[in-house]
Length: 317
Ligand SMILES: NC(=O)C1=CN([C@@H]2O[C@H](COP(=O)(O)OP(=O)(O)OC[C@H]3O[C@@H](n4cnc5c(N)ncnc54)[C@H](O)[C@@H]3O)[C@@H](O)[C@H]2O)C=CC1
Ligand SMILES: CC(=O)C(=O)O
Image (cartoon, rainbow, N blue to C red; front, side):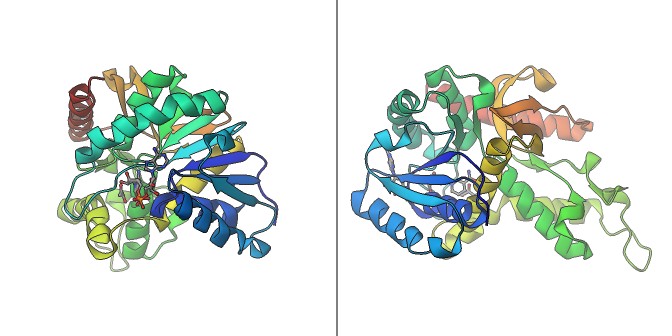
């Protein structure tokens, strides 16, 4: 199996970081995968366990440890280090703890890997993106969050199941905060070119009502809470989502993904990071798209921006 050229460093070898590494190895997202954590026993065990499977994962290699010099020469760094939500806790409640960890990590990472693209997964990933970009001074396109790539995957899975169409033919996005104010862009959602709101069931009736669409959006918005309630963390789907982002960057794909980068005037917003469909390729986010939104969607985008701005400001950013 061919692996994408490039060095991926995953910071944090917990449930999420080890799943990012696992997904990247299986998908061949990067030739070299490195796992870093401050917990020596944990990171060494995860690396060993992953290495034991590489007979079946093709050309990629996995190494790791507690020395940040391992990040030297990275092409892309995925940051998963930090506290996770306890059942019922919101992502924004992690902001203070995880901002302090990032403030310590980011300068040391950019010293080791000054040319890398940085992808924030640690929550609240939108707020941490603003902090990482401010601390590093890197261009906004080089420091971004996985954002609502995961939530969009959740939505497309739900829609595909509901109407019996392949997920790859469902074009719909969750945008805004990766969190409680996120929302779907129904106005531009399509299935095989048919506007989603016009999609008809086999009996000719409209497949979706405003109420059923709101129920779907609620299902996506609350999905992480249900998974965390059941198993204490979400890890597999974010592992795959992050691996997909890595591929878009290392493969210079210019793929449209709903990642979160610091905005510079899109929809009149400045200095706040939230997810919008964005062109992701060599060097990171190459362009943030201004897709058509109806008045309700614009209002919800404003609410996401306010929530995220308030969180960043409370931390001094
Ligand atoms: N953006 C997204 O879509 C998602 C984000 N997350 C977030 O990812 C983060 C990690 O979650 P889990 O892996 O489940 O947590 P975890 O508790 O399993 O792992 C966290 C790891 O970070 C390490 N760590 C802490 N400080 C560190 C430092 N300074 N340097 C290096 N490593 C350090 C810990 O030793 C631990 O191994 C959480 O903030 C969680 O909310 C989780 C799922 C999806
Ligand atoms: C934990 C988290 O952010 C998620 O699974 O969406």
